[in-house]
Image 1: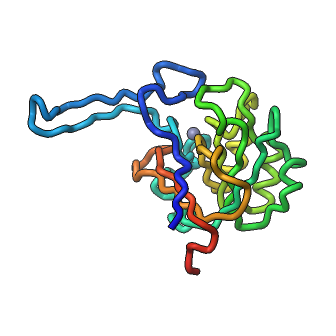
Image 2: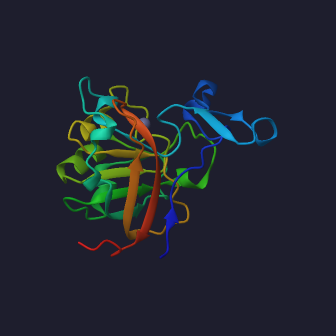
Length: 211
Ligand SMILES: [Zn+2]
């Protein structure tokens, strides 16, 4: 079966939000073959680094945590929408062109997939776009940008989606993926009580799920 990896590699050099050095993962060896006869690695990283999922608690006080995201929402048919031509932001008007249906899991491909550097002007989903997706009652949304939102001080996009229990995946890699239908498998690690968690996300050919 063809499996398409749409995850970022986690390395000490990975792109991090605002290029903030504190957010860079630290990865080091606590045991080596030379000294210990085995190898063991320790990591220290922000839960929002690389490909990850946001849970409601990220933006909503008392909101649900990442381990409660229903697994039924994370192994699902999905549709990749190509917005790589868009320069600034994805609005309701842009999404309307794609005829989004209730219950769809939508992945948004933007120009972010084509660079490994942090872009301070990354393409994001504005409040009108988030409201449109919420009104369509989508199952979930993912984007390749380092965040689904910027330049909205009230975090309206996150709040609108997470407030309606629509999980958000950020930091996908979609340059090698064409617009179209797939099966998404996107499982955040079981980081109990956290507001987010890193994940490995993959796509399978449409129809791989037997309903
Ligand atoms: Zn996040």
